[in-house]
Amino acid sequence: MKDFIYADNAATTRISDSVLAEMLPYLKENYGNASSLYQIGRNSHQAIEKARKTVAELIGASPVEIFFTSGGSEADNWALKGVMRKSAASGKKHMITTAIEHHAVLHSAKALENEGFEVTYLPVDELGRVSAQDVKEAIRSDTALVSVMYANNEIGTIQPVREIGAVCKDAGVLFHTDAVQAAGILPIDVKADNIDMMAISAHKFHGPKGVGALYCKKGLFPEALVDGGAQERGHRAGTENVAGIIGMAKAFSEACAEMKEKAEKLSAMRDEVQEGLLKIHDSRLNGDPENRLPGNLNISFSGVDGQSLLFDLDLQGLAASSGSACASGSVDPSHVLMAIGIPYEMAHGSLRISLGKYNKKEEAGRIIKIVSEVVLRLRGEA
Ligand SMILES: *Cc1c(COP(=O)(O)O)cnc(C)c1O
Image (cartoon, rainbow, N blue to C red; front, side, top):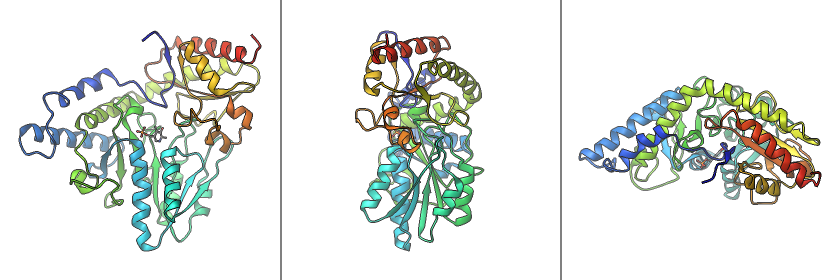
């Protein structure tokens, strides 16, 4: 493929070489089914349990609290549907989430509404922040679950998770967080952060696609989503994605080890790009300028159509996104930008640049040049 700049790390990331190397033996000679009793099966089983311990330690959990899934979407679906369907038996049929969640959460909540559950969608302020006080006021006697994302995938805003978790704990309500954008980027300690359930996904931190995990506080077992064999201690059926699980543990370890250094590098580069792009007239920064993921930049340009912008940027060798990857292709502006009150026309011309560890410092200048030229051309000003 010809040389291009990849600036869509919130959509997915390139697998790291060391992660791939660690996975390969489990796709080749070590192909045993982890449930089998002969040697290569036992090898797989042991490797999975080692990976479970690694993932657990990196978030301050214990191994029995980690359940591997097919990714972040499944983990979010499982947390919401599994908890609500189980709690219905005790008459608790209400849950709380926010207007800016990923579709894995929002569409799970919608599906639950269709099953007869009630969902409160909390608003956010103009920076994209959910208030713990709002969560507190929304909790009712029949509330079973609160689900608030750790950090937003479009604008990068980081939520007051610890505070929200404390509110839930006080009220005796379970707290789930979609930490897919935060894992490997921000330090997470499920105990200190008062988290009962948490979704993570390997491909957002340089691991393979199609593997993730749901952390569930000890003793908490949401109703199964996938029925079948007795894998994951009988809670999530399906022959384990051995290589994927091993890859996830390796990638998560690497990401956590590089966290501080990476955050400094990415935020410096992001700030440089931000400064350059905000020089374009009639542009604005979306989201929280301070409390934001280090590699995230979301900017709107008036008088520009987001789809045309992405198409032209791609032609110039820049891979970026408008809002979430899942929303692109649809003409509706992002639900996140709408929720923070960005005017429709501005939301339509939004651009998300998300930087990752493989971006080079020199790329900042090229990104500024390419975006500036394309925006002016699309506006008919160049
Ligand atoms: C990517 C993403 C997901 C979905 O994870 P997959 O592993 O791709 O299914 C969920 N939530 C957020 C915030 C994400 O960024």
